[in-house]
Amino acid sequence: MTNTPDKIVYTARATVTGGRSGHARSEDGVLDLELTAPKETGGPGTGTNPEQLFAVGYGACFQGALGLVSKKAGVDASGSTLDIAVGFGPDATSFALTVDITATIPGVDDATAQDLVEQAHQVCPYSRATRGNVPVTVRGVGA
Image (cartoon, rainbow, N blue to C red; front, side, top):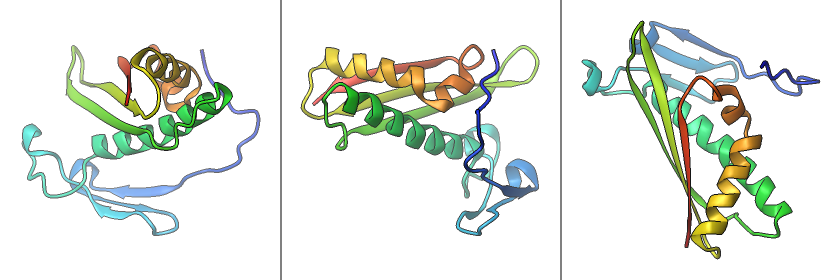
């Protein structure tokens, strides 16, 4: 199933040169960084890698979705913390990703936290984009 917005309200634009050992710059110049492969994949590990960028983007989006579903449930999740782990490795034809998300939500028990992250996983645009292609696990922890 394809998820297509009814209306585009924002388009992020960036230019990348050199691939995993190159340079990335957003159109507005706010993001401007060197890319290097991590040491674990044979690179120098001296710059940012695509998996880190994906983890940050997914985490920020997921936290927004968590805030949305938490508010509807009458829970203040503004103090929540997300830990995102993006795995990268070979598969049968190329390389593939995995994602593990752990959300710690103050003021709720583990069961409530788990319910909220599962709801967020249903509405988060990154979760919807990866569904059926990238294995994503979500875990909610109360604090």
